[in-house]
Image (cartoon, rainbow, N blue to C red; front, side, top):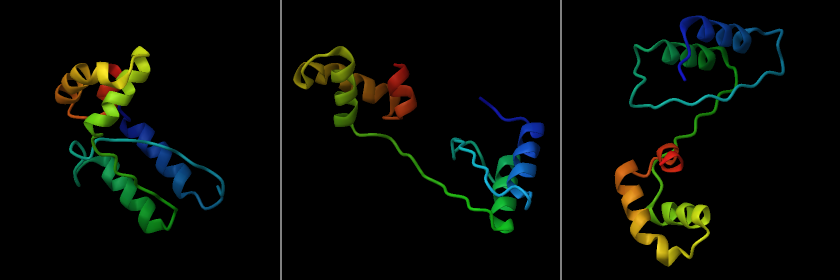
Length: 103
């Protein structure tokens, strides 16, 4: 999903309006695809400068053992039987959870 400029403008208006005291939004993006020239970066910077609360959580790749747990739970099989498949899933997805659950 991509947010167009109009959507980013709307989010900015809602987040920066001092008369709106209770508003929350959860978004995610790939930090390797958003640099300082991207409109989202400008919006996040404006929100920070305005003093609105903003939290960032970096989610990195998961370990092979975690992939094995997901595969094991999904297939309802013991983890030891799932290890060969989990190894392939981890290698092909790089441990990126969004790719793991879609694999």
